[in-house]
Amino acid sequence: MGNGILMRWPWQEKQLEVKEASLESVLRQWAALFQTVSGITVNAETCMQSPTVHAIVTSVQNRLGISPLHVLQKTTINNRPAKVEQPNHPIAQLLRKPNDWQTTEEYISDAASSLLRHGQFFSLINSGGNGGRIQALLPLDAGQVEVEQDKNWRVSFKYKSEPFRQEQILYARGGARDFLKGDSPIVDIRESIALEIAAEQYGAAFFGNGAMPLIYFKLMDGFADFQTDEEKKTFLERVKEQFGGNKKFSTMMLPKGMDMDALTIENDKAQFVESRKFIRTVIAGAFGVPPHLVGDLERATFNNVEQQDVDFTINVVLPIAKRLEAAMERDLLTDEDREQGVIIRFNLDAVQRADIKTRNESLKIAREWGAINANEWREMLNLNPISEDDGGEDYIRPMNMAEAGAEPVEVDEDAPIDDV
Image (cartoon, rainbow, N blue to C red; front, top):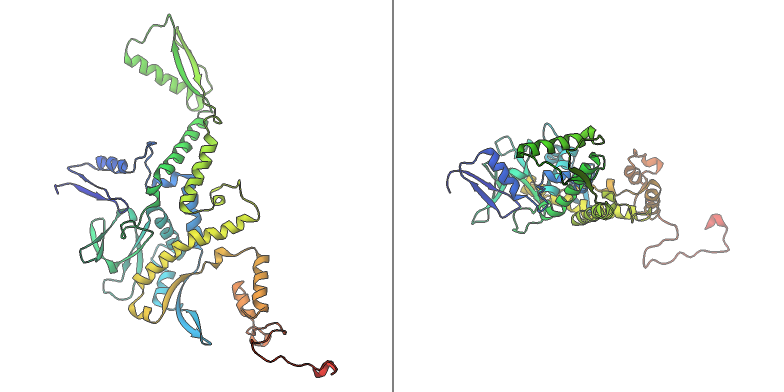
């Protein structure tokens, strides 16, 4: 390769060599890689100009950000599999304070945003340089990270041209067509996103001009043509100034022999509103997001919104949570931890809770059939436990229940009630 700048994009099989290039020319060519037919540049940063993408990313990162993240250990209780929280585990302490400037909620929210926009999320694992206990997780800009794999299948990374080994990076990704670098959904549907941004800009420009139609000039007999191109340019600039901004409803004197007319395009005939609805549905469908979460309430009812909310958690939030869990278990836990059954899990109950009445009705059924005791019920409601003397640890079940195969209890119907 010659002297120059080499640019590689993790989600594209493209590379660009710019010889003796200035920063400005590099940026122009970088933007050209993401240019769309509509002329709008769409990448993992500019995609947030799309109202639909913004709604999707915000919804997912907010829901995952408020979900508690626990380090658990698999064990057995009463000869049954169980998971016990390990609040004092080094990784649990790390996740409560991933670094000096982010809380757990902020760190997880940013990770979800990166996964949605870039298809990848990277964090530098800072162990103090001695390979010991991890001190911090330092998030990296996914757009500046290169993922490489050598002929021996070893994976390595480069961040701003600085190399890192696989054990130095926490790497979570979505699906990858090359089995290595996460595919960016933004790049895959960039034409639809660009179309929505273009429609947004058109609407803003239209109403910003007081909803005035386009104007054009007709030259009639008697008009003395412009003597120079400079005169024509000056006249057009005067028109823009006269009909733009706060002067859009003012009048203007036209030269003799010139007439002005308006070119109108009615929004209903241009299918402006319908086009925006369709684009919104297409983008939401590409992310698997229910329409009501991006503002499409046409088919929403009181009955199906709650079910759509549950579907959103299961089909959109849960896959991202599982990818982060798997990446953290692989890159943060030690071999000893894995042998001892240590796992990392999000608790998505916080975002799947129904209304208080439905939730307590379901807990009542679980309590009456012996699945939970009073203190477990109270814990799910964020209430403090009660003592054993008050029945906090007691399990109950209906009196007419019996173990399968057990002999039925014979009752003497003639005996007094107290003797039964």
